Length: 346
Image (cartoon, rainbow, N blue to C red):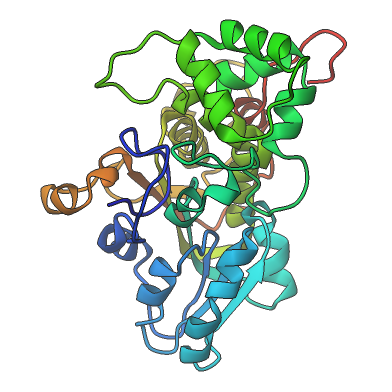
């Protein structure tokens, strides 16, 4: 059984699943929802977190999701919410603008569950999975540049960077070189031929994850600009949370967690000693978040037993101070981008 979002190292290629939100109790404890509060679920999915939040009386919730299938699936919960739930198709990187436009800001809480959902993995036609052959797509919005476009059009250098930096694939250069050579005769249009090519190139044992898992992760992140959207969502939440409001973020792999960890470290002033500044050293800006409890929170034994996929989930939470928001941080933006190459503009 798969549940939640993220990358399950045993089931990353997909398969039958039922959606269960990961770290649900811990997220609710982190957000501390209260009667009449205004909250935002930036990764609505199947509505697991949303349904739990709406159990709080008079709570108002704005849900966002890029996937039109998720928006269509929200109809029943919207109907049951008696006007307390609004769901919009949008990227969570735009959450600040949407919260203001809809009159939901300022917010008491924001939650983000980062990564690909079980429903997307399960549908072969979406191209996130390679256990069943399907179009090489991976677009969460079902629009724009697809994985096939990148695989068949990008340079060898760009492909290698995507596999290495976004997929953390050590054989990235070899894979990129083989793709560029093979696509001349026949473009890669479906998932299985690409997975099979990578499987022939990457040494692996039968007990290990499929050798194409990391490369497919890298492609998906590139197609959807997932790390860039995460950075914009963190900064957006900082802008629309009221004093005392909380931001709770669940991540599933090291790339996402590194960004969230650095964001909260920088915004909370962790490691900064204002009383020990050198002469002429600028005073750091005031903290915009206080860290809530021990970080990160991981799944307990009971959840791990019923949902093995939760073992990679990490929850980090911050509580908004009264300091003004700082906006985009160059270091965070750099963490989300591929390294720049001379003359490439990236």
